[in-house]
Structure formats: C-alpha cells, structure tokens
Image (cartoon, rainbow, N blue to C red; front, top):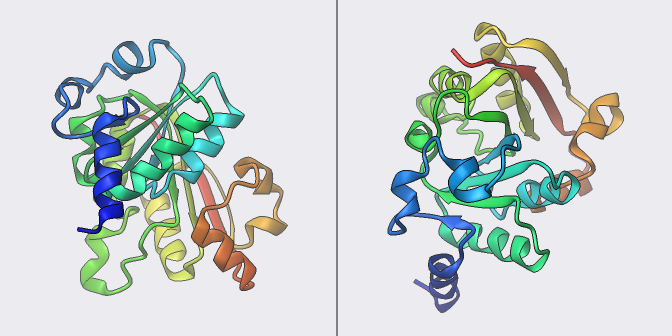
Length: 220
C-alpha cells in the first residue's frame, strides 16, 4: 500500500462523515440515517459507485436541505470526497464504504428518495452481466429502497451499457421514463446542474456524447 493510500485510510478512520467497518454507527445506521447521522427529516439521495464523490458533493452544495450519501468500496476514493465536503463545510453529506451488493444491510425499505448511478463500470463481457449496476437484481434492490415514486438516474458514456440499462428499466416497469443519448444537447441537461466527474470531463472533451435516463421506481 502506498503512503498516500495509507494516509487516506487514516483520514477515513478519523472523519465523522465516513461510515465504514470498525465504527459503531456502521452496524446501527440502517433505518436511522435521518435521526442518527443527519439529525433532520430531509430527503435522502444516494450516489452509487461514487468514486471521489463529485456528484455527492456537487449536489449537496446545490441542495442544502437534502441529505446526500456517496457509496463506494474504495476507501482512497471516498477519502477525497470526504475531504472536499469537509473543506466546503457541508453537513448534509456522508460517505458509506461498502460493496453495493450489501445496500439492504444499510438502508430500509423506502428510506431513500433518489439514486444516482454515474459512469459505472460497463462490465462489457456477457459473463459480467450480473455485475452491471442496472442488472435486474440491482434494480429490484433499488425498488425496495426507494420511496414510492422515488427516482433512479443513470449517466454513462457507454452506448452498450445504456441500451442494456434502458431495456432493463423498462422490463422492471419503471414509470415516467425520460432519456437521451446526447445529454448536453438535450432539455434534460439542466437536471444534472453541469456537474461532471473527472472521467466524464475526459470523455466530454474527447467528443463522446453522454447518455442519461431517469425513471420512477417506487418501493415494493
């Protein structure tokens, strides 16, 4: 492990806005995010596979009366988002370090208002399909966690993943579906407030178009 990663892991251990294994709240937070962490009854929005948390932090700045939680397994990435939120003095931000397969261990049915999936690994090979974050097994989890009428967002530069995701969302009976294969030239562009991840900016600068969809997926 590099010295830089070691420093970031120590930072996570000391940061109150990082929820990870080894901290007491890690085992008790399920169903209690509003009371035990945020101290309010505001809506909760997740960013899955958040990386450095660009969306978590950017949206939290834009919506101070909403609670945002970035979820990722990579501690060194989360540390950067955690530090950015602290530097900005944001109290409506948390980062949960866990595998997305275990979401139901940290959120109860109907506890979440929106979910953002921003530039996930496309897992392009057929044998990787079950790992795609829009695979039916994941969509079923999102339906459980979201409130009735809760919104799912997906952004990706990968056309194959987007076509797959669109098909799966429709099969899962997502409602009020809106989508575009060229976000920055679409009326839907205003939804994401111009926030870009590092890799999104790279793709955008190279001339790639960005695919986006949103739909309602209520709790079941």
